[in-house]
Length: 130
Image 1 (cartoon, rainbow, N blue to C red):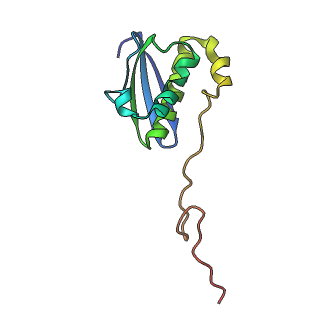
Image 2: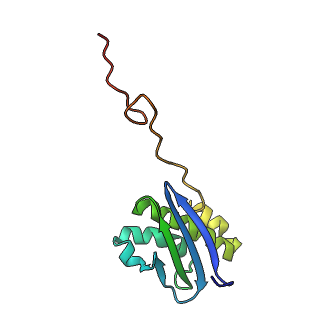
Image 3: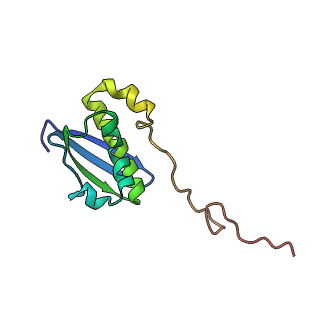
């Protein structure tokens, strides 16, 4: 990794995304694939690119992303947080804008663990009075 690259990490549910941003033409790769191939739906792509559009820097950076764990939606959430944190490292004046859009908040919601003596996290075995 070169010295002029900006690195950041984002997490969502069980997904983790590590990104590396370098000044460039605006290429975006996820796990060595183009973003459009890795996230085929337009909704996921727009959600992923939202921090760049808020900061007006969509075509200024070459971004390489390594995402693993969870599903595609969780990975997009992790990438969004990582992109927002990386943009803050570039320009600290973006903080109020990104914060107002809710892009700097780590979503803490996780799957609740299964408890012993019951079939799921909250579900109970059927109760029989007699």
